[in-house]
Length: 142
Image (cartoon, rainbow, N blue to C red; front, side, top):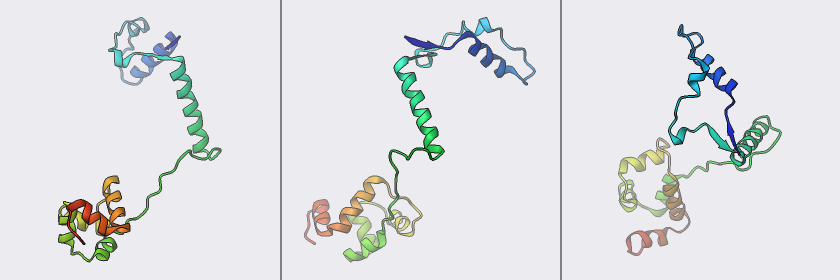
């Protein structure tokens, strides 16, 4: 079974669209004759509708503090300058090692540019195992 918008919903939507515009509303029977492409179909399966409504209700509970969020994203600051200095490389040398521009590295160190997930992961490897990271990236001994 699929949910189809009831006629009164369509009539209300048509009335709202034209209220305050100075235009006469389109008769409700015209609205039902509009043909939408498949990706804009006005039907939804029972299962999808139920899941959507559960999500909305859960979101409202989280918003009002009645339910804790399922997950939280915590931003952990990565001190790029400290990682670079620990390895003992200049900005240009470290930028060359990572195959990035010196300007990008400067932006990371000054907090002007945000680290993406892969860059953050690579810098975490450099922080915890710099010798292995250098060897893995460029094949020379540290």
